Every structure is written in structure tokens, then in C-alpha cells.
Length: 199
Image 1: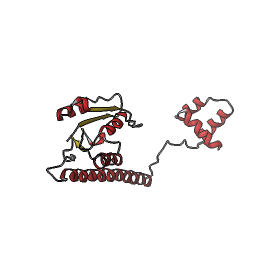
Image 2: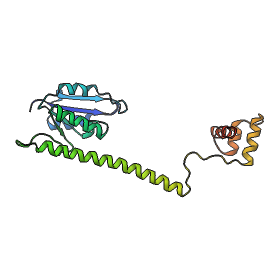
Image 3: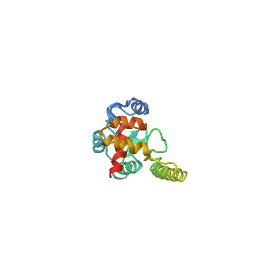
Image 4: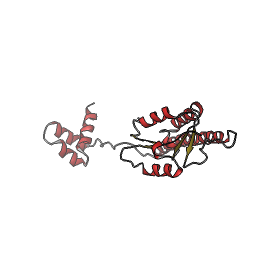
């Protein structure tokens, strides 16, 4: 094995990378070989990762504390995993998951095979969980609607009181804030309901 690199990513500049750094140093990665990105998860602009990809050569090892350091979601993680292990022919070791270590065991490809298999399973489980959450949310909303639960902001009932206040406001006899206060709603809610009435 040639060079060993460590990679750390924190999602915001306020986050502290000490926990990841401690894990990499304890594992045995030289501090000079650890690259760090402090970027927002939204932009996912990773200059240190780009530099790392240029540095990695066949036979090198990349060590990360957790699998989610490789990407924002499992599609991206799988893409980066393939890029490093298949195209660059480097190894990956994930400290938090010992099964995700592609280094060859003896003269065979057991390490790579098991790691790829575990990663595929993790990807499938994560995707299934996302779909399950969406299904549960949709079922919960449908069930609530069937029970008569209403979603969104409650509308002001078109009552005689509202109509009287609306007419008084239109004629300038009452302020919108006073009308809203009488109904027990915000002035924006009252104004929005008036707009609906005019549309």
C-alpha cells in the first residue's frame, strides 16, 4: 500500500471537526495527510475533496470516520465509492464500520467484495426507509383528512360579524387591525380573507 490519506467534512463552518480528527489520528493517519472541507451541505462545494481526488493514486488508502463523509446521499456515496475503488483502484476504510474496508485479505478480493456488498445493502435500506417515510406520511395525511382534520391555516367563517366588519373597513369606519382584533385573528389573515371575498 502506498500513501494513506484521511478526509474530514463538516457541513457548516461552525461545526467542529475535532471528533473526526481524533478518530483519524488514533487510527494512524498522519495529520499532514488529512484534508478538511468546511462547507455548507446546501452547496456541497468541496475544494479539499477535489484536491484529494487528484492526489489519490492506485494502491493508496482513504480513511474516513463515517460513510456519510463521502457524499450527501447514498447515490453520491456510491458514485464516489466506485470512482475511488473501481476507477482509481484505491482502497477505502470507514472507521465506524469495519466491514467497509476494501483492503485485500490475503491474495483474494474478499475485502472489496464484502465492502461493496455492505454498501449496496446500506444504500437499499436507506432508499427503502426514505420511501417508507413518504408512504407513512401520505397514509397519515389521507387518514387525517378522512377523519375531518383540515390542513393549513383555518379560514375565517363568512359570518354576519365578518361581513359587517368587512363593510365597515371598506367604508373607512374601522381599521383593518381593529377588525382583525374583533374577530380574534391577525390583520394579515383578515386582509387575505377580504381579498378572497373580492376575487
